[in-house]
Length: 416
Image (cartoon, rainbow, N blue to C red; front, side, top):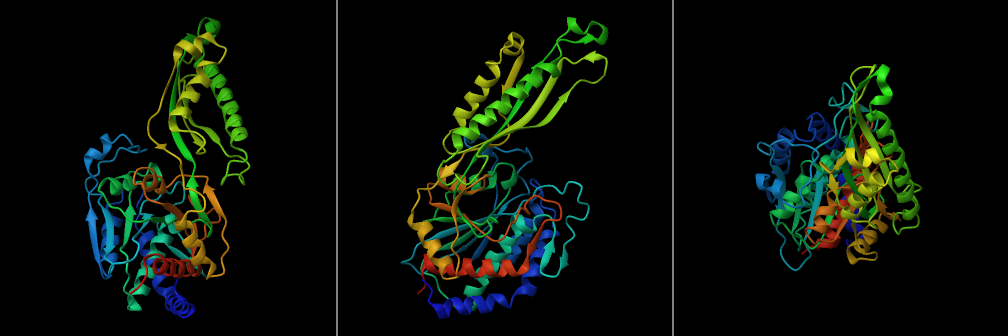
């Protein structure tokens, strides 16, 4: 554990970097790195991290990743021209190694017209991706720069993975894991409001096609209205959501959530004229579920929910398929030494964070489930800013988080 003098030195160094933090975050936010369009920002990140001691590399995402049984993505953009940035600093030996991971992609701007024009008002920097997840990238760079400026040599290896496609299925994290990069533990940098997450819920995307029988309005009862049949399915899905919530209550790490399960129909398409009975409705949606279920269980339960509706037509004229996002949940053992180490570091900053499960999914699941590495999620302020209009990050909090990251790297990797 860094002594009080070292921590004070780290904090002093980083506290004087507010201008650098604002400039770096502004640069990153100004690049519209919507999922599938990460080429430009990855080049910039490679340039930025190349300024540090150590090695920064651009790692291509391979086309064969799409045939991986664990691959799932909500987009189908070619990987060409979208490599990922890896920074690696070899330690002197005798310490534990650490991977830190943050994602470079962001969600779309929606109707926020100037989302990629950074705006600073006081301590706040506004722009899409400012909190999710470019503040974390800024904090990690400043943390590594501070350790370098202090002339510290680490015992263990430290590396940074800056991923693509986190927002649409985390293919970038899977790519890094399949490349064989391993460490003793992984710290995933997400805005957690300074709480510690050691689990996340799963998410499954579905598409339901409801076939009807077309007819003229005047002969409506001789047709079959696909919209009416779809409404029965929506009602059944709401009941399934109630079941997920009830069965999730009290589940460890997620027991603070009032609604520990979600089923949402986000898109409904059907019909093209008011006086024609529609013969096809397509619904797209998703399920959020806790680690008390597997992906396969949820798929089977959805089918059961639909095909057990008391309507013979639905049984023979409805198809459900699972395409796009298939995010498995993950759950670290409580009381793991990696979690204890982070809590000990944060205690030196006066923090007493909650240890929770995350009601979302992130890159941690691939590092833990497929990479076999202890993985926890920690970062700065969020306060419901992620994916919101007028998303903003606080520069002062970026600096505080950077100091925490630097101290934890010292604590985990050790110094010579």
